[in-house]
Length: 225
Image 1: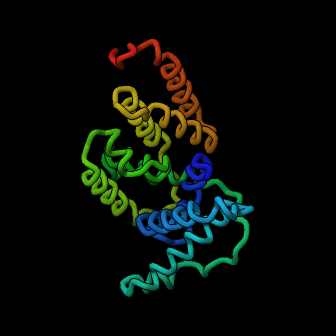
Image 2: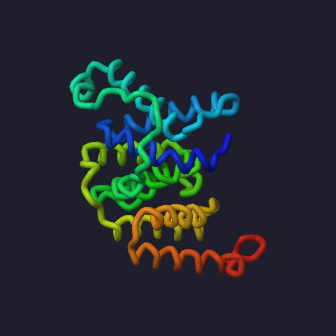
């Protein structure tokens, strides 16, 4: 199983579900169910179109959950009909997911946690360890963040500056924490730079790369500065 491939596809799959009408929390639950199936089935029978497979399975899981919950009957009427299996649209909506996770209604700590969870693909346990808080505390923080953005319109343009502030917070924490979030911040900023042609994005990426390249010289073998 190619973990890097899974992590690169997950944000796009989540974005497709949200754009089709699933609320953020339900969409992520469905995507996680699809990932579990992928881990079980792909080693023996890898799909030709991994993203299309994940989108199809995740959408089915979302519809199953919506039908099982009578309180979501009205939402089920609003979502699109299940598409026939086939290639997923070759459109990268990851940028919109960045905007959603860095929504102004979220606190900085919540935006960071949600970005690492939804865009970065880290587990709640990994994020909790990185920020030295109990896993239950981080789970509650992420859950509240999901509820906050669930009603936000997905097609509205976001503020790149807000996203950059979130990524910079991740980078700074990575420099001082036990878990290497600096490298994760660089990866996410590279991904953002590939989605949007913006001078401030390029500038932040260059700054991160400069500091990250000098990281080894800033610390002793025991990790002290």
